[in-house]
Length: 129
Ligand code: HEM
Image 1 (cartoon, helix red, strand yellow):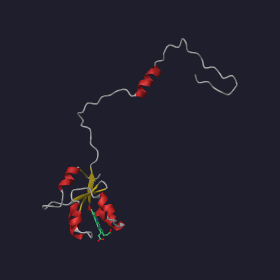
Image 2: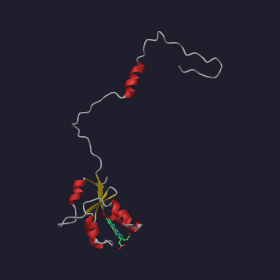
Image 3: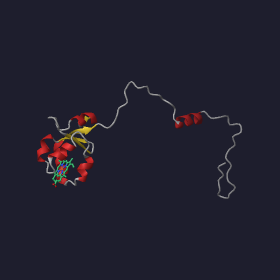
């Protein structure tokens, strides 16, 4: 499984002050530190997005499919997106509407006044009342 990173972890790797330069593109985390000086679009553009989500900028720059393929070489993991519920959180269980209805169906009410459904009088029309 891919390594998962918190947004806050990625945000620290800005590529400035001797730190690595990580960017996020479509939920994936890339370490582009070694690619900074090689980027045809310039080092500054990558640094501008260091520690940030560059999905939109990457798309808007109109990169070739080769550039898309190159991305794979820099992938270090994925962004953690789901927040897990703490195990200690109390879980309240309430019957759902369906369960409630099922209970009522399984304990039938007295059927004194219940009448068998009458057949239609040949008109082909069934009354549902
Ligand atoms: C890991 C991320 C990136 C990779 C691997 C990458 C790769 C490349 C490559 C291979 C090219 C040459 C043209 C092409 O093949 O499309 C290029 C050009 C370019 N890139 Fe990136 N790029 C990345 C991120 C970014 C970001 C975040 C921006 C922000 C705007 C950006 C802006 C540009 C621009 C403007 C050009 C055009 C340069 C020109 O034609 O003069 N790139 N990039």
